[in-house]
Image 1: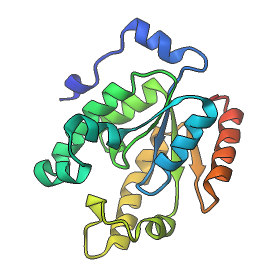
Image 2: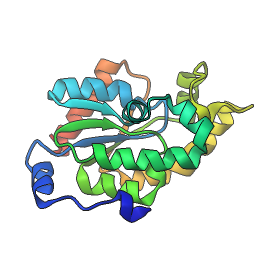
Image 3: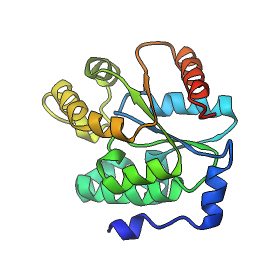
Image 4: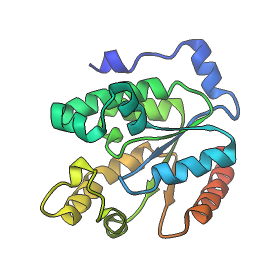
Length: 193
């Protein structure tokens, strides 16, 4: 399956992605970390197109992520997610919010590292729970103890986010407009934009 998904970029595609100002920005992190919310604002400031990987997958499949999980299970969803990531990551000058588990597959981490700048939006398990405690749409949180589930997921995924990221940004509890300005400053300091 890895060869099916991680297809090499053509030299034209690679040149386009690597041109100054054209390198995509990929946002990774746990559900509730702010990838979509901050990503939209970041794209607006940078005058780039914004894409949300889950929304792109829903548009392609014609059903919500929760339905894909129900019908195909997490493995089926992750296969579809990898294919969609391969497709979306080929677009230059975008901001892409990935799904929280997109980094679980090595081939996805490789795609992200090779094709763009990866920003890990980090938030504590307590902060994530505070943001998500009323959200009933997240398939992975439909358990008897969502707080523990979030803690377990953070423990499992954080090393993968950290090893994949070019930039680590604490989302904290700042208002969105301030967080975006802080992130823009970090990206400028790191010479990403």
